[in-house]
Length: 88
Image (cartoon, rainbow, N blue to C red):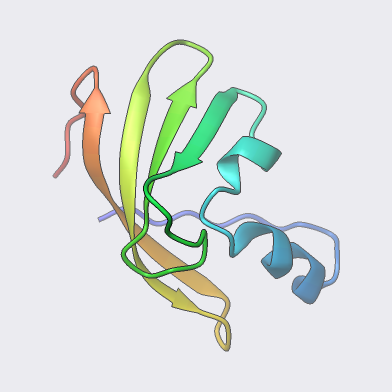
């Protein structure tokens, strides 16, 4: 199980509005080439799957498991990675 956090010196509401959308890596992480939400899913829909393509050419697919606006938390799981990623 992984956990990440970071301190961003901006109002929490402003930060959460940016990162609550499941396609946020494409807007906020410079090493990401693109992010696609599969099908017609909303980027805030639990169950949505995103495909992240890194500038290195690696790809990862993640499924959004939970999104909680009250506590400003999101959980997702790695579904697929190329090259394969270790998951423990």
